[in-house]
Image (cartoon, rainbow, N blue to C red; front, side, top):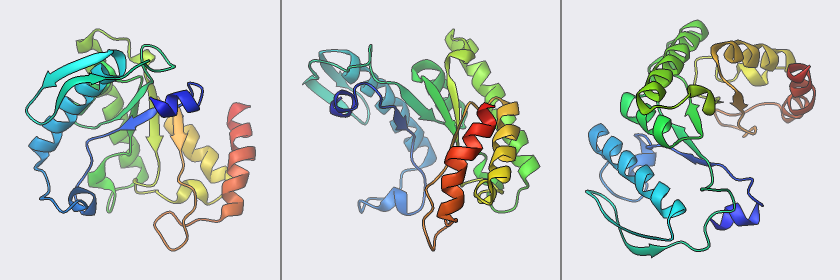
Length: 213
């Protein structure tokens, strides 16, 4: 709520269920099962929606609770700041359809190591179709949701940062699927996100100009 105020109503909240590996155990706890992680995600998003839209909230769930939690004066953006919900499974897509103003995908995790770019795009097309079905079930127009692609987790994870032309091709192919926004990681040396900063800067200017044109 403070970030929404400081930014003048320009912040979007990205929210997901988390994953396995070090992300799941960083606080010293046992990793949640997929079932518990999905259950926590659903309960958390629903409660957060209430906390950001109601002046006072009392709620007791299986995992989370609030007792006369007051959030005043409310968000700058009304009824609250927008949620960008990351999801690929049916329960997560249902959450995105009900609570999201945007949906986020990183592609299909099963294809990260051994898949092909073509298989990845086919998987994303299927995700978008299932998002449409979830929206229909929730009584929402799927066109109301932005569809965001977070790069770096598909078989062609580094390709978009090879050159301006490579980025334009990557973005164009995903726009054809229905993706409305591409998110690039800033180059991080000696990591999976290593790239030439000069190319990254050119993409931010020339690449976006080509797409806009």
